[in-house]
Length: 248
Image (tube, rainbow, N blue to C red; front, side, top):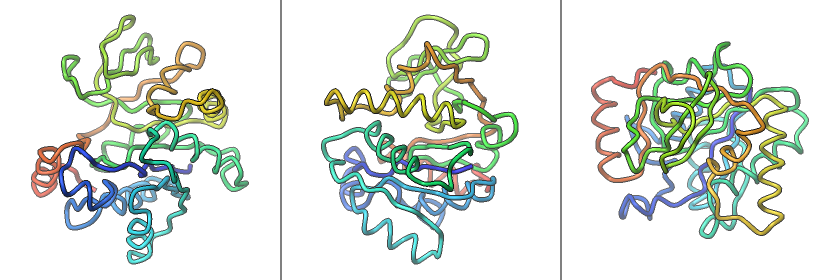
């Protein structure tokens, strides 16, 4: 398995903290999220980790070097005017040029997450093989949550807006596993959007677009997670990490 971390954006809703630092370098539990991601992913069997960087790309590279953790980087120089879907596109294109990722599953994830090894174990273990979306507890009336609806174990809706069809199964954690064929299907969709001049789109938009023709299973997270969008999220993440909620 290989991993792609989407870490290009600026945390504008985090106040001064998000201006100074990329969200991947937010300190939780005595270290930056990025290094926590790398350790947890490698511990779960991921062979290489690549990050799509933009805002303060230099700081991300320095942090990885200082911790002596392997990290390959792909730059989204237009991070200010593009969305996470465009970062995903750049990452998929870059991985496609490498022979060491051929034939292996890919995990891609948002950088602004905190979770423990138990949370991601179902996705990275045998039960997550193939194309799968990690889903945690959530509420359908939560405006910030990316809502997932599924039918017969297959995702049919992935968006912040409420949807029809299937049943509500929870909130997207922000992590997806794709086999090589699924990766190719998603890359075809991002290529289509970019060729048509669309670059300000989120990765959820691209994944949602292929759901009618490409089955992606729903896998239930094995533990808690927090997506860090606001200062209150960061405070809660630090408090819950101190309480041992995210065991690594």
